[in-house]
Length: 384
Image (tube, rainbow, N blue to C red):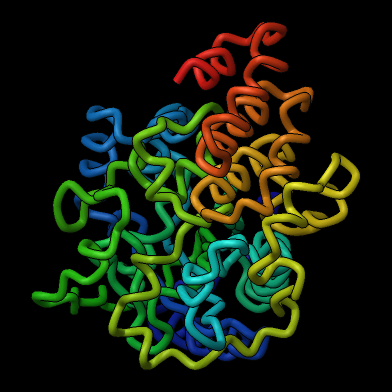
């Protein structure tokens, strides 16, 4: 949202406290489930941890994290005029066990947040409405962010009292568990800050122990290069063979570390109708995913987080899931993808078939397809 200017903002502490109280009421009226205020310098050591994360190369392909690290580490580098950060949260807590699909190997597991309309659209529209209300009521300038700018949303949300960053590095709320979409408004109003939320993880290590790929080198540390959410969503190329079996049937993201958090027991199912889950994205059949052409993919992913993945990477993930399924009835769909235009898809089709077919059937396919394959990565899969 562009910076906007209005009448001079109220300067006295009582006036700013009144603005904050009214702001909280307005945010609740707009459907936000959590709201708090943080000072722009309240991220503390988060910037140091970010730089260490980057220096260790744990961000993998996510070069955009490194490109503007200085702005992430300090809100005032991003916008020198900011005096307070309004952090908001919108619950997307599932109605039911999000890990139940992992016991259905012929279906694809899609992360809970992606079962629905892209939250960026919903959250940003409401944040803009809240920002316009603030300008009209109290003046000042604002900037609105929903995961689209170099902002450390989770440390700022903790500083604003919405929750704390758990050992899985995600935000945990006492009321909403691990299921909050986050957004922020930077304001030139010096609104009274809330107290930072204390860490309440205690001795619990469930989120660390459940990770299929051991992506947590230590509590509160993540190596994205090992994270299934990163591998299936952010990673652009071939997924290392050593991680493929652990991916199971996860075709977009991974909720394991979020879902096992004990604080989720206090979270009621999300009430936001604009983010209602779509049936076709809740445990879709792998056979249906493998049959998607470009038009089908665009239809399925329209308006959802899946769109940013692109068809080739969704096929890559679905083929890995097919190979892990043990369901030989998926072999014909995988075989049809041996001639896909994308070498990423062809390579994973070979891998899936190697796990679904017997040696004789696989040898026949190799004799038919391998000699004409030009891509080195696909050739390597045939040779494996």
